[in-house]
Length: 148
Ligand code: RB5
Image (cartoon, rainbow, N blue to C red):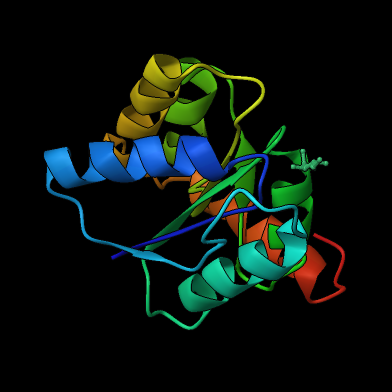
């Protein structure tokens, strides 16, 4: 199950990606926002990544104007590794090397077709583990306020 969320800046892209997820056969839960009305990204992003942190959803797709605000808010939640991506290479490596569990996209930055490719790449790429697990564990140490 994939958690999705947006503010007004990412709302239209979220709707396009939901249609893509439907076509591709992915299950998702939309944590809002539910219209283009001006709203605050942290509220919706927090709801979505909290579901990931609780284990109710596997990954989150977050949408705001740039992806930046959503990612900043998401990364405050323990266990969340959120990346902003505007290219497929970063999307692929964020899964393979960083085991990212949230992806933020900018509805005012990337076009719909590129966003679909980024999402597809990110969802289809697995974590490589090995030496990368050690590095991800070091990130978790920082969360615990320990020196990595
Ligand atoms: C809203 O105007 C915009 O600031 C928001 O969508 C996002 O881009 C923030 O990072």
